[in-house]
Amino acid sequence: MIKKRYIYALLTIILFLTGCASVQTQQEWERVSAFTRERTGMETRWEQTEEDAKNTKEEVNKLLSEGLTEDDAVKIGLLNNRKLQAFFEEIGIAKSDLVQAGLFTNPNLSAVFRLPFGGGSTDMEGVGVLNIADFWQVPLRKKVASTRLETTILQVSKEILNTVSEAKHAHNECIALSLIRDETEKIKEQMEEWRDHLVYRQKFGFSSDFDIHTANASVLDSETELARVEKELQLTRVRLHRVLGLSPEQSDYEVVGNMSEGKWPFPDPETMISHALSSRPDTQMARVKVEDSRRVLDLERTRIFTNVEAGAAYARESDGAKFLGPEIGIQLPIFDQNQAQIAKAEYKVRQAEKELKAKIGQVREEVSASFERLSLARQQVSLISTQVLPARKGAVEYTEKYFNAMQLNMLYLLEARKKFSETERRYLEALREQRAQEIELEKVLGGVIPGSVKEHKGQH
Image (cartoon, rainbow, N blue to C red; front, side):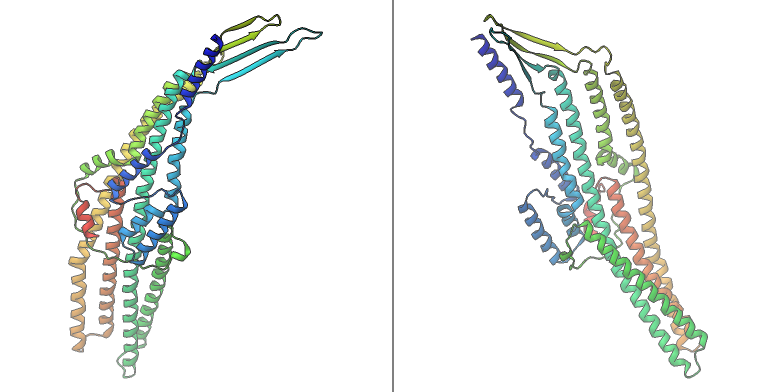
């Protein structure tokens, strides 16, 4: 009776320790989804079944059919980017590690049967033991695994922001290069028109060979530049296709949108730095790494006695006598007292603390630099739109007036018009750079620019 009770008690303990060992990721995924909504105002989806893949494809095709805006590009990227989807699997991997860290070591059961020679009864001895060192090591292992799961969630959050930034950059490049291509084609057509007019005037002695050669060179320059822009636009479309995770049959879509000067305000640099330090996933990861290294150190300090076993032993002698009693085993830390791993963990604590300080310095630099680059881009846009373009337009009006009065050579008019068209193109390139710097500032701040999200969405 005593033996049966002991066995029942042992089985109950084992079932209790293993009863909740399943891998569920719903709670972690809800955190990722909430982060996505907070930073982007949009949804993301972890594609895990064929039904998920089918729904995603239908939603993506619908968004593509209506013309791809910047918001659409972000939506599709969050749903369909292949790299991001691969990152989502890290959540399940890290959660599995957490569940594994909470599992106790399987008990050992051994039996010895001593068979007599020459007659007599068989002796039997059985031992069942548990590694009771798990009782103080498992809680610490779970803390370490929990911290690493937190790091994984932050890594996924960072990849979400990277995907959003990539989608916006690629969309901005497509819009800007399409407008620049149109402007370059316009310049080319103007050069051809002016060259043909000079050839016509040469018949009457009003144009020289030098004028014709100059005009031909301008046409060839514009053709070369147009070919370059068209090729760059094709490459940008390939990049956008990759960021959105589209298949070859999903390539027939129109990228729509425009570029504006976007004069929405942004806060002072110190406010943005403070915001970035509190909201960027990589700064949070650096803090979590410090916590993780400290928990690893606590765990290593408990591993001096790595194998402590306790259980029950049962023996039956050949004369029929039976014995039941406790079994205890311990590995003596005579040579290996885990001193090397403890020292390693201490070094990693100091390393993580120093890396956190370095990360803070890096964030301050990145935010300050991004702020200055955006400020410069805005100045360039303002300068071109308010001063350079009006000046070029005035030059065209002046040359037209005196060319019509037969007081200026047509080359002066051709050059003035060419410079004006080139300045219009420079203005588009300045808008392109300004938008690129706005997107980059959002990224280094952790997804949003404090105090300016509404203005930003209204401008773009």
